[in-house]
Image 1 (cartoon, helix red, strand yellow):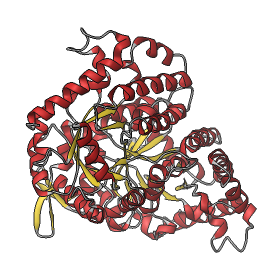
Image 2 (cartoon, each protein chain N blue to C red):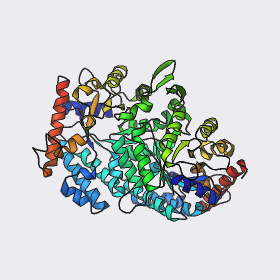
Image 3 (tube, rainbow over the protein chains, first blue to last red):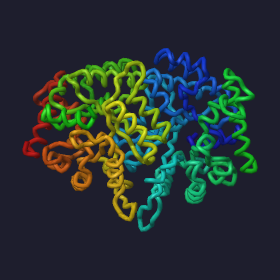
Image 4 (cartoon, rainbow over the protein chains, first blue to last red):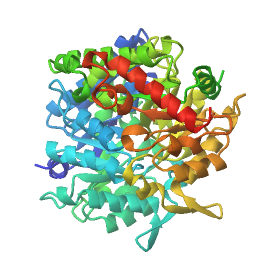
Length: 306
Length: 306
């Protein structure tokens, strides 16, 4: 079964469009874990491993997917990178929760192939990721090795189109001319994603080459959904970054499929934010994350009339 | 001393503009190491560690810098990622050889800050990298955290402008309009690199925010050198990818400074390519790499009349 089909099935099965972002910033961990993390790199990796596994357990039946962010693991050095792989394996074996590794990798052909191998055909019995985020600044020969390896492994990629950050427009909104038409860079990337995924369209009607489009830009989200009916969207920027349920509505098709919406800090660190902070103690961080996931799931479903 | 100043000093001290790319593809290792690598992930990491350290020893007095490519280490899993850090530390302590980690990282502000911390302020006594390659598709708030962390650590970054691969033009050559002017995306990236590096210009006249510009596009290299007098260039695409000494000449200023030229396969796997294959045995791979570095150094210097 293709990644796109598994993704749509995961959404339908749980009636959830929530992607829980695992961004384990050490400074935001509950005090006991934060203190343990302070005693050295191995302890920091162990603290993050415990934190993420408990979050995964708590959200496994409420989220469609989880998305570890590589940066926060690399920030802990080699021990942190090893913890990332442990957490990905843990999530995959916990209720078949698909794992999207947010690593935004990019390189030229043969090097892109090495990255693709690292995550879609990893060594030593490591479980491949379900999907990987990819930065396509280098053009198709930097992306096709990912598409090929993903296809072979039944995995997928999400190509950055319109990212959720304030300055994404500096490059992504500039108008480019290509093939007689003029459109913004992000729309060009969306079209390329559709083209790269042509051979990987599953029974769901979606391909395994998706696009990243930020919740913070609902207008662009609506345009891209219209123009790219086969491209699944990974939508960051909900919650802490400012996007709400109405903003992400245009990402979905008429059946409420075709997209997943990510929240990281707003879910995993719900324990120290209202309205959860007053309802959950610090050691109930996983319960707080579960409640925040449930609330986000319901908010999005309500906006979609589901 | 700023990264740019250390880079220019490294070039002058050795009269070498060569960047040795450490891309340890397991399939291309000499047979004894390849066989050891086949017996498991830890053994693969050990083989790559030995290979890269011997190459570093052999080229330390002949190259200006070394550039490990993260993809080939990640392809070996967590043990490979740990080997990458070992090799970077080894290179840094071997004759003060600057290390550029080619990881092409990119993300939004607070996540970019985590990547920057990972490499410019790593945990557990790991030595920071001297410079990191960065993909700026996300715009300035995805780049400035790297600039800030690099500045604090005395390090640098190289922003992708015009990459060396055949399809780099798909996005990078498209014309964009910005501030009343029309220019290709790669030139826009070059201008942004100059702007981001304004506060990090050292005594050498170069800033610690450089740009990646491929040897395979000499015309664009010449234009960018003309327009960006303070931006050091990391020039990939020499040798195996087709660029020659005449192609990279326009990357340099009148004093023969301002750029380094990378070769990976052409140097580290010289042992199995002519003219070295007939002169060196397989177990002399490090000596072959040294000779290939020397030849490349001399070819570039000759083209520059140095």
